[in-house]
Image 1: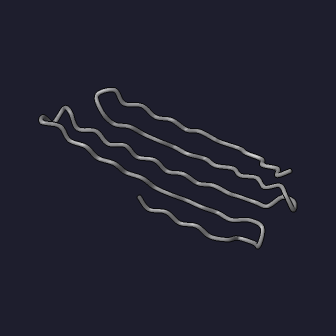
Image 2 (image 1 turned 45 degrees about the horizontal axis):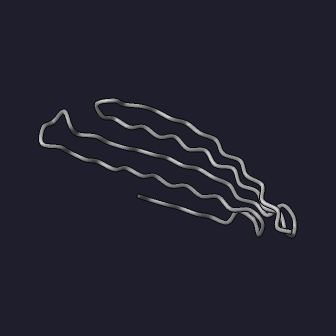
Image 3 (image 1 turned 135 degrees about the vertical axis):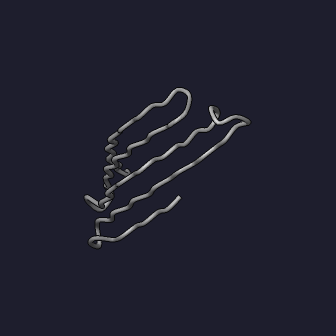
Length: 79
């Protein structure tokens, strides 16, 4: 896993991470590889409100491969 974070402004930050996980079984057809890239922004929107936006792309190469891309948005307000 490799991660990077950078504060863009006093109220906003950027983060990125890459994960790769390999596994091998007793035969070559049991090998698998999971890769995931994630990019995100977090921001303080107001004194008690923050927001986050994250994009993630994942691939899994194995007997049953798949690909997934997600976008997550969150707003948190503390009372």
